[in-house]
Image (tube, rainbow, N blue to C red; front, side, top):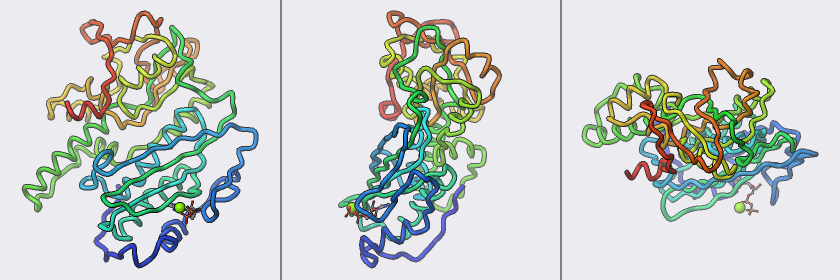
Length: 349
Ligand code: ADP
Ligand code: MG
């Protein structure tokens, strides 16, 4: 994980906007031939040649999407990039460039933005992404971040949400619910800290779920693995708001129904034990927890042998005709309609 340092603070006014942009972005390297012009002109220039350009953008507001009291700025920068790359990978595309726009109030010194950009730089290095622009502004309150990710794919490779068909298998990568349980641990520690700031909690038993919350990874590797296995999903979406709402998106856009099997939902053992400790239902956490950034996709049944036994994948159900609806088949074999409860509404419940 990233370390925190106590440093001297430099006010942003000292640098001015252009000095700040130059300071924050000067060490970024470009990885792609397709980046004809990056930072420094009125706009970036990107050459996608004969491929299709894939574009996605996200807005993150302090207090709504992140809480800096348990999210270190370096992690925030990394995670903000991951959330965007995840959308590009969910189209079965290669992510290549990002722009980063940021507004901060005067409570943020230069060192805070440096930390934020360190996280962005690490993400760009590990995922081979070019930072090609952005915008910088002040805000009256808090931090606002907008990242746009760009990617490319041959037309025939692009996977939409809308092409799942009855009898397709429903598959997820990785495991679910860990990011939400990591958040529960961090929130609890924040409350403990308020009461006793000298308390040094031992969070080692929670390291997996905390890491999933603070430093998630977008599943570039899964897109590459699918290609290697010769599997072209019929539909795909990334799991940012919880399995339930993402399945419903696929079903609605593909005009199909589905059966999701409760006993198939992949859960890490540490998620199960954290759920017991917090008295939360692990199925509900996987269905509604959010921020897992795994991929949910459908494949033709004929492709099953290609991913059978692969530890990266779990078949969690299958697609049905639309009129059958979207259901969870519970462990005791009852059929429960899936509802679109994302992490937002879940947090309020
Ligand atoms: P403009 O006045 O045309 O908006 P700016 O002075 O804001 O231009 O930006 C100058 C250059 O720096 C542009 O290439 C822009 O994309 C880039 N840039 C501005 N802010 C950021 C940022 N926060 N991160 C990365 N690049 C940035
Ligand atoms: Mg600008």
